[in-house]
Image (cartoon, rainbow, N blue to C red):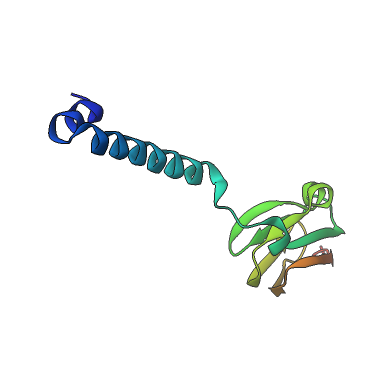
Amino acid sequence: MTLKQVLSQIMPSRVAKWARTSFASLALLIGSSACGAAKPVPSALAQLSVEGSPPNARIYVDDRFVGTERSLALQGLSLAPGVHFIRVEAPGHFPHDLRLQAKKGKMSLRFQLQEIPP
């Protein structure tokens, strides 16, 4: 038995119509938020441009891999405002850790990893 059938049996027609419409609106609202409609507005985020060496350096934000220098140099990185911990590492190089206070608007991350001596 469908929800429409149940409601039509237990409620007068006007109330049933209102309830069906309300449930449909609620389902639409839940569906749109699950599809990402509730994401932060891009202008409220920090837009981080990345440039560094070596280009195969892997970048982590808050212990989560976000990309290589090469990929992030092309597309940038959006971060929520607040404190973030960034780690940059590459094979054969010393890693670099930093604490970043992200603020909405444009910011830049520039780095030059030092090679580990033989």
